[in-house]
Image 1 (spheres, protein in one colour):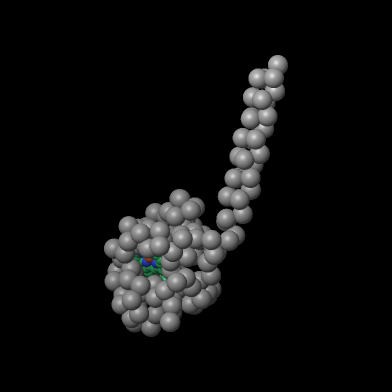
Image 2 (cartoon, protein in one colour):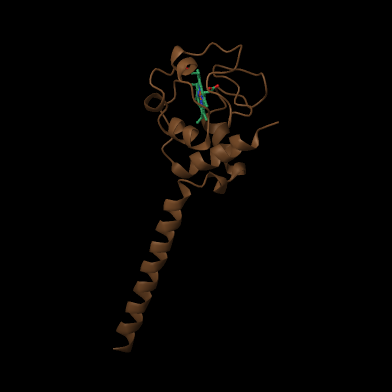
Length: 136
Ligand code: HEC
């Protein structure tokens, strides 16, 4: 009897731990400040650096992502954006970036960024923390 009770208590401890984890993971979606910029730098190197630089005024196939958080979309003067991005008329906030990086074509229809999207929520949060750290 005693053993059974112990095992039950053990199970409910696991359940509440799982519950706590779920709640904290669910909270992460809105809290980009929790991202790890160091890990985000690695995500950037793997996923984005082939087409984007974070150096000011340095465009590659894609526009420079220097200080992109807070920047108006399609606003680098010497970059030949698609009409979609030039006319979209929004500012890159962390949540806008999150949606865009997850599904570029769905978020900005007609965008010419040949990238399928990054599914991993945590990787996106880290990546955005990194991008937010690249500023003047
Ligand atoms: C294969 C090349 C390629 C890859 C990989 C790529 N991009 Fe892009 N990106 C582009 C191009 C090209 C554009 C311009 C799109 C347009 O004008 O429609 C762009 C545009 C953007 C913009 C809009 C910038 C502005 O000035 O409005 C952001 C933000 C962006 N990319 C972020 C990312 C991030 C973050 C990654 C990595 C997860 C990434 N991109 C991966 C090519 C790429």
